[in-house]
Image (tube, one colour):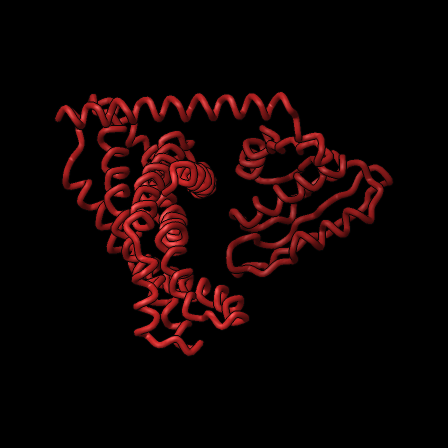
Length: 376
């Protein structure tokens, strides 16, 4: 038996009732008119009831069911009563099941003005909860470090070694690029002013002191916050979403000792080395710019040696250790306290970077003030 092409016809029996007559075989592979044609026809009638007539219907499969469900949903949106007649029993049963429960429509959020979202009470409560969460995390981390010093922590050296490699050699490429460019920028900015006095040679002092005390360690820390801090948050957040951290707790192992401590120690060890590397490349970058200003390499090295002091170098190294702790704390805290969805993991990574950068800027300002007061 040859298949008949599917079709439909919308008829009007009276002002209140419209009939949708189905014809032909509604099966896969047959081309039929799209539902939007029927939708346009429904908009042009004034009937309050639609009757689907299947007396001339041939073969059918899921194609017909999809069409009927679209018709049913459209009738419900237009407040039109949907009825059927002379349809096969199989279609009637499937249609009853498909339309037994109405489609869930999530409530739309009320439109609020931008100033209505700012509530002093909610901001204070959010700040309090964040403070309590941070203090709890720091307390647990302190206990884990104390147990590590006693040799009782469940911290594996192999994990520490792996994270050292990830935070150190793996970051050389991006640290190299940023450090050289920062050194060149420092030299260029200084040269613009020093050229007015014929003192281009003192660009070496500006670059050396600026890189050793401030820019080398700060740029390395910002890069590590966006690279390693976000990676820590994403790793721990994914473990939280997969309930791996819960499994670690079930086995009687502290997540702080097993997951957080090796990451933090690796970053504390890697940051001073990366800072020294960044300082060296930044000074080289400044020398490249100085060469274009008529300062010979020998003059640049000689003047740079006079500015190179142990106090400047020690300031940068002390900052690097502090920054390493802050980056690790920000990243691991966001990851450990992350939600259990992919969106929450992404939010945790974003929060880790933002929090780490805020920590770095505040800590940098505080350390500079302290060193200024003590005369370093």
